[in-house]
Image: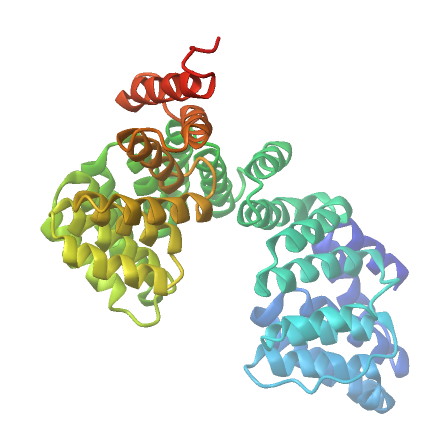
Length: 446
């Protein structure tokens, strides 16, 4: 069986299968049982679609050698089969690496990623055809636990060991984890290193889609749209259009300011979206309508997203509703939705709009307090942070520069992120110049 395992390590699955079936036909007695058990392991590599063949191979192994009925590898594969069939596998303490591997696979299928990682600790010293898959499994488990950085590291280890036929789909897993870990440069480099798989249109579509995600994260919406056009083409060839491609297309179009086209893309995404994703698409559509100035449609869609108690981004929807009502000059509704946004975890956005409400009412000290909290809570360079920094500077200037050092510090910080063509740029320069003069005793500093 060493030759079979060597073929599996090389990714020569057809040849390995043919060798296994020939060996099964030509072997009698207990030896046949060992061959059938390895054949069962082979089928286990392919997941639930080979569940029937896995069950048959296990039955043949036990029929040929009844002592295998209680063998740990047989038991582990039987529990994996139970997981494939939707049951709850009975996970036991493994006595060797292969047992640990298949029990970890069963745990992952049963929705127990933490237990899978524990079981994989006993899976050291695996044969090559399972070793890289163990790291792939670690990646899946870390991803399910919401740890994309750890998932990315595990996928990269798997990718360094996997044979060429298995690298393209594994690279997609690694690139997706890198994107989730906010490492778009690494995702893009990885995709370019492996390249698309022209023999598999569905995989090639995913490759272009992930490349588009990376480009969009790097602030290149035009390149993202080019990649998405190729993804759409490959999905059409595969006959399997996704909702993710038009959704990302809408997001890229939003960055280019093509709001009407973005709305059309989001509408297509909504038609394709599974039920659990429709509130997310409604939210995206609502933001697009808001930017396009269609406030009535934006209100309807944002309230639809917010009204879904299972939607995980209700706080962001509340913040967008605060912006909508601020544009409508309804300050009471703005305050109400801003407070709701804060309650639901969107504190920076909520504080920003509470600042706007106080500022419009000329309650300058209250406005300053809200804007300062927004600037403190928001990531530097973000929209909320920049608006807060700009407005704090303006209010302090209006109040006669009571804190010239703060005016200078905030004006300089905001200028780093304000385009020179923006009207704010010249205003901030004036505020900074006056603050310098005050700090130098009335003389303008060079």
